[in-house]
Length: 208
Image (tube, rainbow, N blue to C red):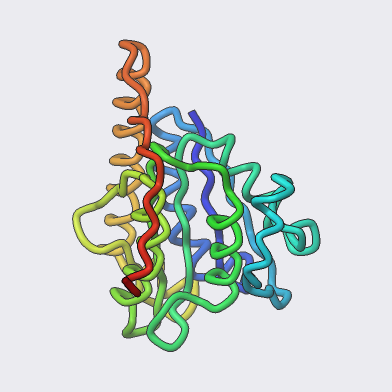
């Protein structure tokens, strides 16, 4: 089993990374392989709604330029995902949101893969950013993994985050819960249980 942890911070080894490392440590202690994927610190464009990813089935047409398609392939191969972001203006960072818009729009399906969001902030905005990231999972038939509190750490530097003992404990509980759920899903598959097949999509636009 493997979990992909996506670091959506422009700082490769900053506060968000520190939180993800704590989650990864708990996963590894439970025998789960981990990989942290950093989206980098270059500007990332958002989805332009061209529809080429659906027509050509080759992922985002711009994805080779900024790692979107690489990350999408890693997520498809993984058993679960943890998405981490700093708080910018009381929400998730702009780069990670643009990145995820394209990953989740161009994917075939992530249904059944457990997902969790992790946010880091200096002071406020954590719950709003947390809510923003969780919406990617709830539109994709992905079980959301929880912890003993909302998945956030506080601090302006990695050293300060390491002083947030409750936040780090929340990260460890999250890793343990993710590992437990992955093992439950694996046990279910051994008994012939799989992700429920979706109905054909009905799309309503509310104009009639």
